[in-house]
Image 1 (cartoon, rainbow, N blue to C red):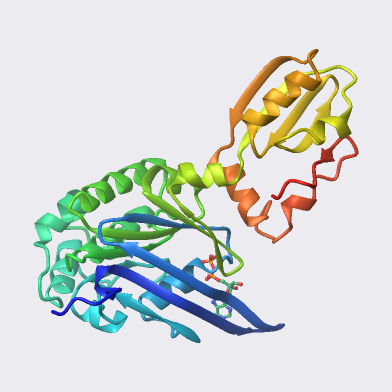
Image 2: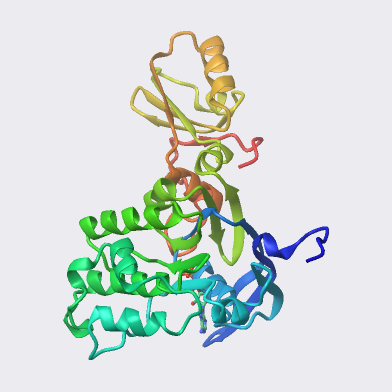
Amino acid sequence: MTPTLSPPTAGIVLRGLVKSFTGPNGPVHAVRGVDITIAAGETVALLGPNGAGKSTTIDMLLGLTKPDAGDVHLFGMTPKEAIAHGAIGAMLQTGAVLSDLSVRELLDMMGSLYPHPLSVDETLELAGIRDLADRKTTKLSGGQTQRVRFAVAMVSNPDLLALDEPTVAMDVEGRHQFWASMRAFTSRGKTVLFATHYLEEADAYADRIILMARGEVVADGPSTEIKAAAGGRTIRGTLPGADLAALAALDGVRSVDQRGDSITLDCTDSDSAVRALLHEFPGVRDLEITGAGLEAAFLQLTGDNDADGTDARTTTGRNTTARNDGVPA
Ligand code: ADP
């Protein structure tokens, strides 16, 4: 094969994806120009609140939804070609598992549709469901059904697994086992893209997090980088009679909150902020600096303080709060 300057064979390339739907109140812009490139072997979380466009993006990646604009290359193939080659395994939120078969029979049948399937025993082992092999698919709990779906997604021995909210019906133990299975799969050099709104799952299991909000990618990087991008440190201390406006104006401070004698500074740059604080307010004591969790980064970067689309950056709303508007959020 002749090498090209930007070979789309490298992995997963989503370019300029746009998709709108017709809703009851007019058009819904589900995905508004998404560019994502994923190298082979990466485990990537697509993180975002409900309605961010994660499922629509995954559906376009799988060729289940036709984009209004943009294109998808999966290891140099179209989604249709990649799926026919068994290169893609998918686990979606919905979709029935065939009934009247045992789990073993189901995996055997699904595997036979592909050119290079895993053996049924290897798939059962990888998915951690050997004990379910002879169970009828009609006799599975919600969490067990999810794990069987995971096995079905892996039986073609795909290079890419695309998973939409994979652990949604699982209890804590089920989740734990699921992620252990996933690690076994990714240790084979496979590529995984999973959508989730569980911040801790994205943080714990992905090499990289792509944060989506309102149909756009708002951050993309290792979770440590995403936390840093949000500024992400808080300084707490005791300062009786604090001058809130003066505190908010300090270098590296985004906003200030006061409860009694306690102050909390939300910082874009905590190193500068603590130096400025000690210089300007030498009486401050009990200083404590904490890093923001992914949750804080998520709220900050998406501007969502919950799933209803309210803008968290402008809703501090207490008269004991001051903001330093000179610092970009
Ligand atoms: P997420 O997976 O992040 O929760 P989705 O991709 O499911 O987000 O949805 C993005 C937006 O598109 C939402 O506002 C959703 O209601 C809308 N949407 C998704 N699918 C359809 C559809 N088939 N018809 C109309 N609107 C849709």
